Image (cartoon, rainbow over all chains, first blue to last red; front, side, top):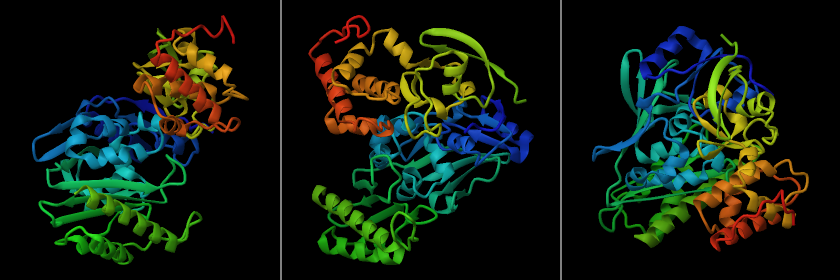
Length: 286
Length: 170
């Protein structure tokens, strides 16, 4: 099918983009990479009257690091998450997750900001924002604000971004020498939506896990932190017993729904298998 | 204003200006407005990969970008890749190995293959399959496609010049 007719504007700055939206009201939609939006337009699930193309807004581009935080411009493409040297060094979890995002041609066009703003619970990058304890920088008419990932993802496709506001950048605390990370997912075919996916960040200054952050995708209406599993690891040596306890704790963290792909019990089982494999790999590497 | 807007872009090395309705996809623009029908429209929702074109040097779905978004960009279609003889060796290997049947997916597959080999001179079969994960072929079962791409990787690494497929079919 073809999209309904719409008008098109291409602002050069965030201020112009916000103004273009305010003029059009609820009938407007921002477009960046468009890899989720354009199919929705083609299927007429959405029919905005005006598309505001933010792909040429310089403020939304680029990756930089101030030593404490890595700033990832919202227009950074999925392919860049894999190839960018600053991301590889300071947020390697994103580089690990990137090859699992859709297919190469989608990764060449889709943006991290778009993926996080859409907040598809089956997408890799929103869940990784949770695992990384990232903060989202949002621009609106009243200025910009930063929202931590734990408050950002609110419900199915619902985030802290208000209508008309724009996601400007993702801010990620830089990975240090004591950090370990791992990512993997189960999908029927490479590039398909994952049945379950998981990213793990561990702070291990010595042999003991000082802090664990574990985030899952495809387990509910939002990406989810697994707090009970994290607590089972904190203060423990990363050994078979600690891993087994973290796997068992997932029953308290996840309550996945039944769906046409897999029953809930199987999804929980797959989440346990996946977490066990990831932690096992990290144990071997530490 | 949903009326056509003037856009200027480079297509296969030629800079041109045309009017395009904002809702017209790049794939439709190439096919209808420029007559470049080598870019195929299959699913029109970014799944099948038949509409892949190079946008500023990297494959993207022609159905997932509106022509107006491509204003100022450089586009290469399968016509541009074949007329410049850049993929002559790929075309030859696909012919030799019978790596197509109906041929509908072939333009997108060639775009992916050219990009893969430009990035990685000797990809493994697994890497070739991974690169092709967004290209649907319902005829071949992929085995012959992977064979053909692997063959070209080997030939290019050995420095064999591409012979023009059109002039001397195998």
